[in-house]
Length: 166
Image (cartoon, rainbow, N blue to C red; front, top):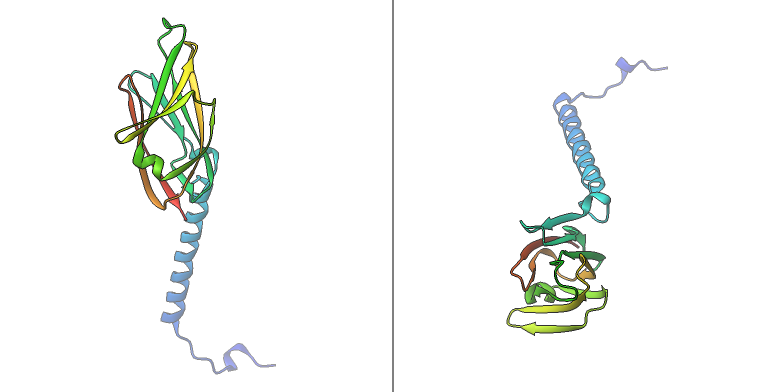
């Protein structure tokens, strides 16, 4: 049986060390991708929900900042109305350019009507004076960064930003 030292194999230690370094870098990149996936960067995960609210906490929105192309996500808009009004009409408006970059699949509860004005589209709801939550099921159909804003007629505005993966 041949001894290991009897084999005529040339040793290239520089090549070997370079190969090991590239392997270690590959391992680190794979670990970072796995951690990013677990953190929700590539799709649905508990950590992916983001909530923004106005300074007076009258309007808040919960949405998914990182989403996939045409995957269905929920956008929850919560409006805390003035309790002195027993019934109240609430207009939640969206930037027209923002709505053009997504499909609204469903709205719950159903709005009374929709309205359009320059650069904005509004969904009109009726509230009984208690805190009100509207859920919009949406599908984004543009890649990259999608920005928009949601507001009410009381002047409250919240900017939102999505990053849409292919």
